[in-house]
Each structure stands twice: as structure tokens, then as C-alpha cells.
Length: 102
Image: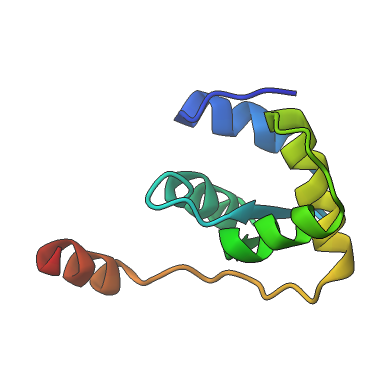
């Protein structure tokens, strides 16, 4: 599957998930926040992982293929083998403070 990084894309993505789903993604600056918050608000478990940890995991597997599809498969393998922490996000006040200071 491929989904746009928009509200309509998020809605389509959530439709294929069930209540037991656990979404794992890399922290990618601000790029991942909208989806992570949308999933959290939809009742889906979310883990946001350090991209360097994921990169090193992929390198240990000696994978030289670098496509979105292969990355997604490798992140899935990573999620199966490490202890994931659930992502809670920031409160609205924390988010506002971060925006003010940046």
C-alpha cells in the first residue's frame, strides 16, 4: 500500500488497521508527527523509533536495497526484534512551548 501524507491518506490507512495494530515509524523531523498523532487519536498503538537505530539494524542485515518498500519491510523486522516503547506525544501546552522556542 501507499498513502499520501495527508488527512485523507491517514483515514485510508487507518481503515486497513484493526484494534490490535501497532504502527512503528522512524522519527523524521516533523514529517512523522501528523501521522503519529492521528494514529494515537484513532486508538492505534504507535512507536516512534530513532532513525539511526533502525539504520544500524538494516546495515547489520547487510541489506543494500534502498526503496520505500524494502525500508518498510526492514522496519517491520526491526519492530519484531526489539523492545518497543509506546509513543505518547506531547500535550498541547508542550507543543505550543516547543513552537514558541523554535
